[in-house]
Image (cartoon, rainbow, N blue to C red; front, side):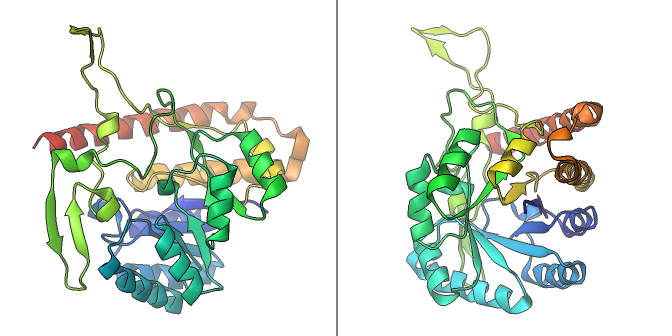
Length: 318
């Protein structure tokens, strides 16, 4: 049965999405999850969240999708062991070496391949399955035919985002970008021995969303009439949900760790209603009645993104 997984960028967000019907919540660990510290949780918060989720019969997934150095791999495994002891049921990982080690030391735990691995085809999916993956999240550019082809040939769980990204030619590959480091860079080590690189999401710093800033582009020395954006605004969707559920997708992932608690709560509430009705009505599902609510959520999503991007531009220029 397909499950709804939602973000916990703050403790309030994590609690609210579970209350609103998410089957699982995913949270980032401070310095280990390719996001800024304002949307990552401390260990004590994760422990409390797991205890709360258990009372609801819900799952907690922990995001550990940076690229650790050789010296940091033992620290990552120590954290995994700690979280499993508290009741965490799975992890989102990008680094294939860490994936192998987690599977070796904790054979029963669920491993989600993070979108940061930059998958492009079914052979990539098979590779990560062989490396120990339980679930693989498909990138935005993969569609229903890709899901069906993978399900026919590979015994692996699939996870997809509940939005599509308007990308210029599909050139953005999550997890493979280093542009932020060219704008701002700072390095420090915490008390546990984690080596941070501010400006590098791959090493525990923060992504400055350089791809989402308007770029001045010129051809033959002549500037174009408008600024170019490498990555467009994600669009929430649900018309395709019935087909994806029928195709056997295990997890539908709501984005938005860096959005407001209230917006993410409302998105989860919306999709909980939609998924439940699809399950109940099968081919009789009619999306029209949900369109006004969906359009309002889209507007709120875009408004919050524009505010966030303005802050990121200011930080990149500082």
